[in-house]
Image (cartoon, rainbow, N blue to C red; front, side, top):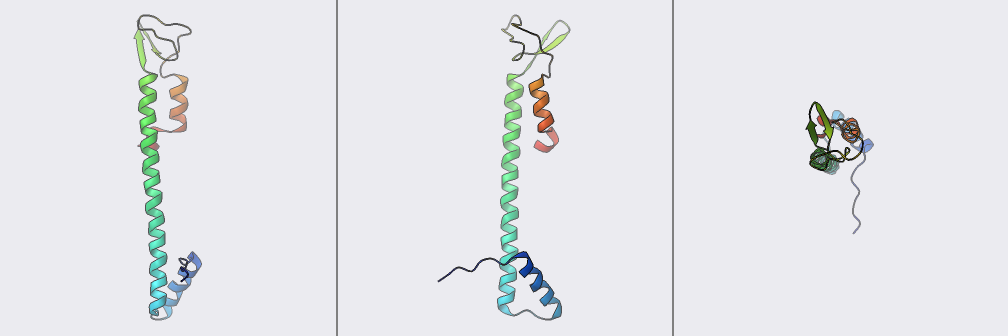
Length: 115
């Protein structure tokens, strides 16, 4: 027994037009419902993927902020990671916080979109 494919958007539109002209036959109603179910399934799957992606972006943001944390010395706030902070002094060039790494991440994934 071969499995029937779900109706296409064009076929669903034809069924809707047919419904305007009079009652649908039971097989037409069945195809219309199958198409609606298929569209609903796709929307639900897309929503789940979007939520998972958002959660991963938020987790990455938290990890980056933990690594590229601010360190305040006198009147300078620098990135601990980029400036090579040892706990007592900077090793290398002092990079202001937020650093280019966090700026690039925020530019690519604005906080509003990740939330």
